[in-house]
Length: 251
Image 1 (cartoon, rainbow, N blue to C red):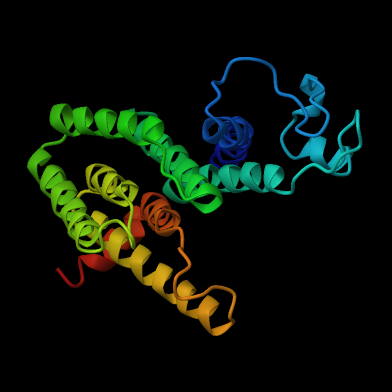
Image 2: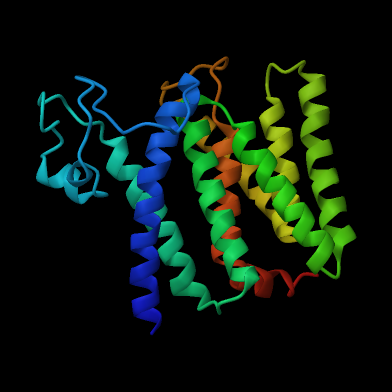
């Protein structure tokens, strides 16, 4: 049963990944989600069989069926990453069908989306973050016994980034990092929310240092901190039971 659920959830993640690919192209260009998908090289409208996650990319050999222009590798990578995150959640948590599971999967899809938006464009779209903040805020208020813990965690985490934002006058951090910290606090609470922020910052620092040593970036180059925070939050959502069992040894 677990294997079947994992496989089905993986394919469900692939489908969302295909939708996310459309978001990743359209939102930064100020376009809505209406209208058919089309080739970015020749503008030919794509048929449904051109849009099958991963399979179409492989069968078409990364070439447009109509103009033979190259299909960007990020299409299957986004789809595969989303499928793996959702599939891994169901494989490790063996969740039951309830609102907590729905919100966990929703959170995974949200943070996968934020990961790629910040990675590709250095933006954390309000159109994704604000609805998620409202949904989790309402859930915490209506359904969570320790509502104040989640709210205080969100406020403290966001205050940390807000201070850094003000101190650097927006040169080192963006307001998006403040907003994603609010969301992380509302989703994970304490201590997972704090651990997610700490691990995300450490990971971003480590990667930045490695890139500096390899001379791939300079001191003034930006790194997508939001992507690292989103990734650490994904780990906390997927492996929350394992992480909490470890933290209980120290709290």
